[in-house]
Every structure is written in structure tokens, then in C-alpha cells.
Length: 355
Image (cartoon, rainbow, N blue to C red; front, side, top):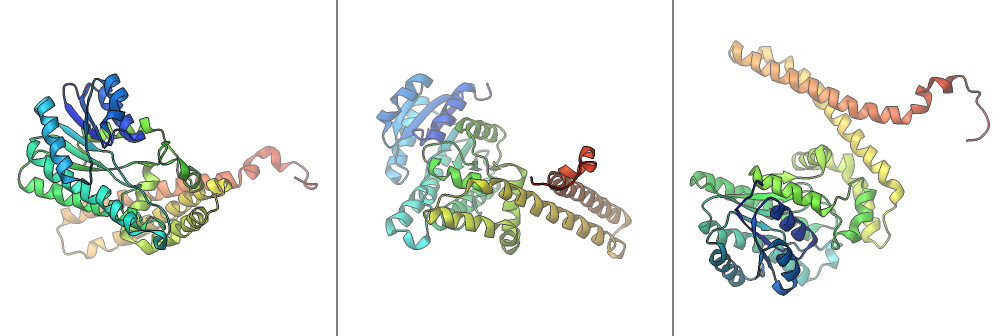
């Protein structure tokens, strides 16, 4: 019961993820306050979890101020605030309307900023967590232009706010959480596309469990999706051109078919997954080679012997880890491709005929 007697406010609790997050915190012993634009629809969930339901509109600063004051009236303090709201518009840029652009920024970015500004002064400790976009929030998929602009802005806002809070010696923190695609009503139209891209669709309960863990461990940034997703997001941040060459062009083709009115071909799932493994395997082996080349330059550095030894050890560890992980990714693909020939029984079969 990591959140026993802690007061947790979940905004956007009517959504599939918001409701699952509320239930996950309730299972950890939290005292819950649930908020949505239509709080009367929260009555069944609130009754089941012993929670209080309040009204909140993320696009209205006055509504957020009332929510803050009402929440403090109910429990006198707030330990965790989870912003589970979101407005997704995924379509060609030229198909966006002015209302699409405005609404996306008002909910995903401006509302989250205003929420943080209003609630930070009344929290001595704890976490304000915002749900963001896929990967690190900055992965600029085509047909996501407005959405990724708002998510990337929110991620940078969280980063800046945490640095400011650290300088002021505040214990409260702000967090950004990037969920995996989930099996919710809002995300269901995009499930064929995610599967074609080789990205698993997870349950809302799995996302909720990760949110609770992120808050319990006070992680400022959490990215679901596994090591491959995090690695590709990092590559995209450092070298967008390399990300295009490795996977983004393939993803773009799938998205063009999907958003152009053609459902993504599910038969390409395995191909996308193999492409990820192959690309990252090659990249890691290349990093390993670079680490060993840099090792040759260590004796030439203007540094003490102890510093040189530390640098050399670090490069050796980096080279070994990246080489063997990359080799494992590439080796798995080679084994899958040539499995038939690795079977000794197949060596003595007569060739010919049809298969």
C-alpha cells in the first residue's frame, strides 16, 4: 500500500486510462478525488472507489482554481495530481481546422501549464504528473503535427519547471509520462496502424500500473514501449536524419496508407518489428566499433594516468555492451531467416518439388 492515506487527484477520470489510473491508486490505499467536465458521469466509479467527484475543465483557468480549492476543502492537502486528459488530432496538416489547432494546444499544453501553475503553490511535497504522447513526446510522426507540437512543448515545460523547483529547494516535482498505445475506446481506431508498425497495444491496467510506479519512484520522465522504443526516440532526438533512414520512412509509408483511407496491412507487422531489430543491431555494432577506435586515442589525451585509465575502462565497457547487444539483435534475425538450414535433418533431404 505505497499510497496509504495519500490524497490523489485524477483529472480526466472518465477516460479509459484515467479510470484505470484511479483504480490503480485506490488499490494502493490512496484517498481519491476524481475530476471531469461532467462529474455526474463519475458517480459509479467514485462510489466504487470511495472517491469524491468534482468538476474540472482543463481549458478554463477559473475552473481549475475552483477544483484546487474544492479538493483542499475535501482533504486539506494534495499529495499527487495526475493529469490524464488529452486531445488527439491525427490527420494531414492541411486537413486541420483552426479549432483543431486551438483545442489541441489548449488541452495538451496550455491547460497542463495552467494546472501546474495553480497547484504547485499548495503542494509541499509530491508529484504533478502529466500524460504525454508516444515515445518521449518529441517523436515527430507524420500526420501528428499539431499533437506532437503540444506534447513536445509539454515535455520541455516539465523539464524547465523541475530545474526551477530544484533551484528553489522545493520537494514537489513535475513528471511527464509517455504511455504505450492502449486498448481504449479513443485509441481503438489506430490499433491496426500500431500493430502494422510492430508496436504492441497494451491494456489500460498496464499503463496505470506504470503510472503508479513512476509516481512512487518520483521519476520525472517515463517512456513505455521497451528499450527499442526508447532507443529510437533517442536516435530521433540526436540525429533525425538517421531516424528517417532507419525506420521513419517505413513508418511514414504505413501512416500514409492509414490516414489516406486505407487500413494498414496487418501482414507487415513482423516486417516492421524485424526492421527495428535490424536497424538497432547495426547501430549498436557501429557504436561498438566507434568506442574501440576512440580507445586508440586515449594515450594521446592531455590527462592524468588515472583519468586515462577511467576513460579507457568506460570505452571498453561501452564497446563490449553495445557489441553483444547489437550482435544478439542481428543474430536473432539471422537464426530466424536461416533456421531451416540450421536443422541437421534438412541437410540430408532431397531437393526438388514444390514447397
